[in-house]
Length: 392
Image (cartoon, rainbow, N blue to C red):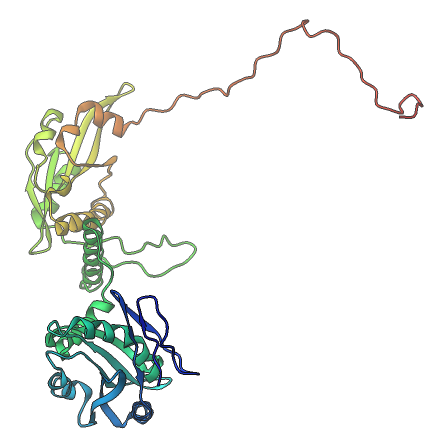
């Protein structure tokens, strides 16, 4: 065995012929990296066959040697704490190779533990850290499934290993916006699943696809309209009332009537809650191009982030199914669907422009002006070479 030792600038101590070693740097001194003994390499070969549960490797006299080993007894997770923890010294680093019960293409898979307690000398910590790759290479990196580093026993106990596996498989940390978007998607998936399990009285998603059919994907959740809400929609259709406000009962999963108070355009902003979402139907009475019109306008008010994620998601999911029910089952024609976050937007001018959007005037394409006449002189005919029989 030979080691490359260097002190200061001298290099008098060179390795023996044919022996290669690597050095670990420490202030003013380079520590030799130990080489495994023949006994350890032979034991590694035996253990890879699967008959050994645990191998402890330590460094003694600048060599990697077998510190201890355990034979198979029970399942790997049952034996783990009883085999691993008693072998860990509070003052001495070591390596532990623990055989799992799973296998890959090369054989049984192993857990590689680097134990470096806080109370151990700094020199040993550095020496073991520099030798870790050598131990893994000697044993065979293809057999090692996971690797852990610990300074206290809780880090490398069975529960510590399970936490390590969970953290490795966990997704990357999300920003606040990404977390909110992820939660909305999760909730939408739950809502879609609930919608598919509704009883036969609930309108189901059309799954038959043909050239003539208008196929739709799942648009949202169909909360049932309460009886008083249905009666209010029928009354609005008959123009007995001019305003309906509906809300979702998130606990009972129904659409409830809030009120049908008579409402003018000037009253609309006051009908919009500032802290919760609502659905509104308004009979908009107005004149357009000399004609008197009464148009039903649907208003979906959602005061931004003042509402919870669940409330925003449910109101958004139920909106399209509610409109389908009102238009198809109650045959109520809706002239315009509007979404707002503040009641102050609902002015007479705003409603008129929404129901009767302004037509963009036709703009004639830009015509290139003609150039000046008579100021460019006479057109000249330039003859090419050879046209009069002359050679170029």
